[in-house]
Amino acid sequence: MKKRVLVTGGAGFLGSHLCARLLDQECQVLCVDNYFTGTRRNVEPLLNEPGFEVMRHDVTFPLYVEVDEIYNLACPASPVHYQHDPVQTTKTSVIGTINMLGLAKRLHAPILQASTSEVYGDPDVHPQTEAYRGLVNLAGPRGCYDEGKRCAETLCYDYKRQHRLSIRVARIFNTYGPNMHPQDGRVVSSFIVQALKNQPITIFGSGAQTRSFCYVDDLVDGLMRLMGVEGDLDGPVNLGNPSETTINELAELIISLVGSKSKLEFRALPQDDPRQRCPDITRAREILHWRPTIPLREGLNRTIRYFDSLLSSPSETKKIIWKVAS
Image (tube, rainbow, N blue to C red; front, side, top):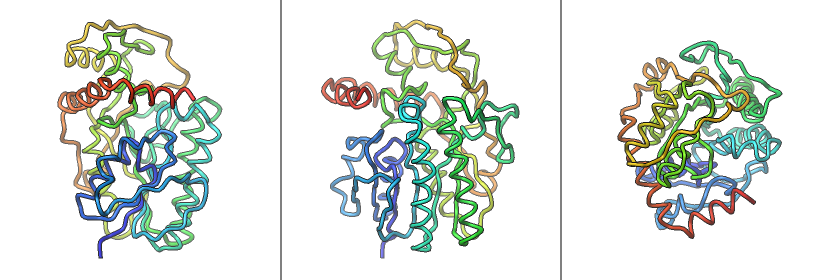
């Protein structure tokens, strides 16, 4: 029988790509999403697949289904979205993870928890290894997401020790690609949309801060390799691109690729915005035999084509913008 896989947050940016890849692997896929940040448009190409099923559900409520594997990706991941309702963000990370761990316990199913590089906060160690415990401001505006994900990791390890669950924790660094929300406030999507509209490119701070950008196809490959690891696995695994790019360099590259007339516009840096973000992926290379392979320029070109197509459909864009505003 085909393996049946649950993907929470399956209609989101990462989740929709993961669902498509699992279907390519001839899995049966149950996509669960409450559509807070995910959109039905992301999974429309999959709806006619016989092995694909969509369920509208909020993971902060228990879920009773029968599956063989669980990928728990449910949680808003961009500052604009997770700060919109910070209490709900924490509930999704904590209560949602408890519900998914409870489901995994009942089914004796392996579960992969999507954690984040945000658990490292504004790091004073560079690059960040999984052993680094982070520098997080729990009282700051990013704390709902940072601390929610840290608590979710703790829950995973406690379920592993107490109930002998098969746990996988992926600390995901900046990822980009098609199906990103055009109004999510993330740097790649924001810069591309602004460049396509010939609007000023908004840079917070000096632009000298760095990020490491991983194309979504590489990231999904890493997630699936992590789920497929045989035997016990202690601790999290960083998944991201170890090549650093400054925000200014990213802006100039996107302007060049788009052929835009946009100019750079500098604004004050938001509170707790990290100065550097770069993964040490030694553990991923050794355990998963994984590393990113898609160059930034190539990945950006693919993403630009996606947003160019999306923005050419005004009715679709209006629906997305209205959803965020509401």
